[in-house]
Image (tube, rainbow, N blue to C red):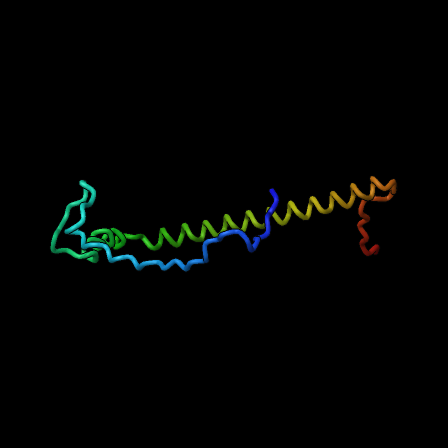
Length: 116
């Protein structure tokens, strides 16, 4: 796929600027046809339509919600801790494996403790 540079003898259409038109505001719910399963109230506005869904939020059990949030945070902390532990274990195993692959004989870690 070769790219041909523009040549002066070709007839090119001059560049144009496209103007985007603003959208018109949607008609009120009474004028547009909605789904058949939702009741239409010609005098009600959008805020009245949303009010019936907001009433369901009044019965939220905040204690239960906070408990679920704490459990979720605990699960995330456990998963992150497990991931860090696994990464550290893999790094230690990789160091020991690299040592053994180089032909060294004293690759195991030595635990140095104070002798009494």
